[in-house]
Image (tube, rainbow, N blue to C red; front, top):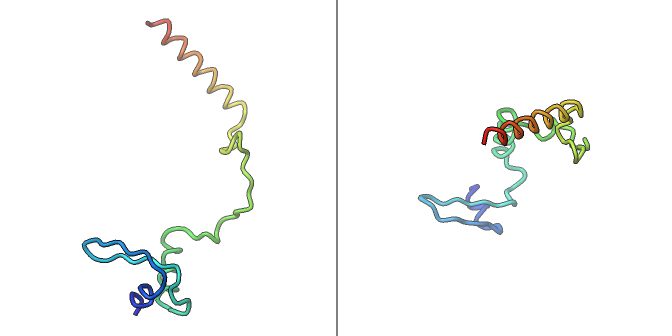
Length: 87
């Protein structure tokens, strides 16, 4: 039944060892989809569990403290200087 609904809708079909059908128009009232969707949210991650309004700093998306960034840059400069001296 699900396959019939998907094939009748506007679908993308790829021939494989079997047939894969993707459709965005499955019947919304189908309880099987609700169950598998709920199960996937429990076993993976649930989009509703995250605050998507949080704004990232484009210059520092990981929110690393500036002091740590400066220390890392100094270490990198020292390493590069040592590498140049060893050549």
